[in-house]
Image 1 (cartoon, rainbow, N blue to C red):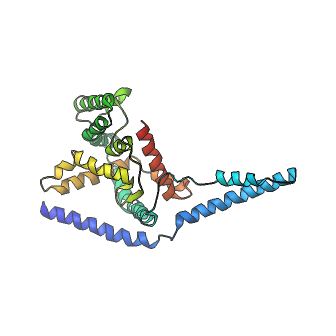
Image 2 (image 1 turned 90 degrees about the vertical axis):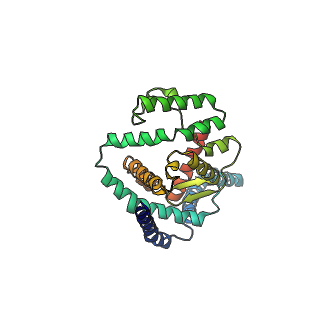
Image 3 (image 1 turned 30 degrees about the vertical axis):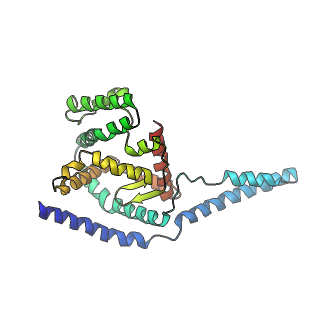
Length: 279
């Protein structure tokens, strides 16, 4: 077991050394700022053209109109990003990791029938019932906590240890998931700064701290308590491959549709978290 753990650690380190230098080498100095300037230039040209047409018709243009145009084209920052340089580098690293490692492995893994992969995904979700249940209780959502327990009991028994999501057939037994990040939001804590975590993806400081607490509630983490950490890491890696195999193409579509994929992912993360908190 110990030799296997050392081997996994060596492979893990090799992936970092292989991906990281190329990831940082291609990081432009200020790609987000450049993209924003380009977008602003396009909008300014359109606004100027409209102003000239209005001036030809009316003979004059009120200066207040230009101020209104400026307000209209201002970009709204959904979350502070003071660690932009670091975050962008980590996003590039995760992006390379996805295309060079995770996606190829997931495509090979797709030989497993989709029904089995969905059953495995359901099992992982069912196992993490304590995280969602504790989140409901700490937010004072007693009714939702009751539904979470009902869903867990039904899926564990009738759903064969969670392989089948039987509770999804009943709307009230399929509530939106709760976690400590949402709990902190309900308690009045702001997002804090945005941070892109290598291997794990985007977080806010608030949600990142909440995720750390959730990890200690997660039953999968406790599998490594008796010096069997390799088992926990292996299960998490397997879960990532299984989930990716079910949604290959989603990330690529987001990148292709976005003017700046980094900003698009950051904003999508904040909007999704706000939606979960509101629920």
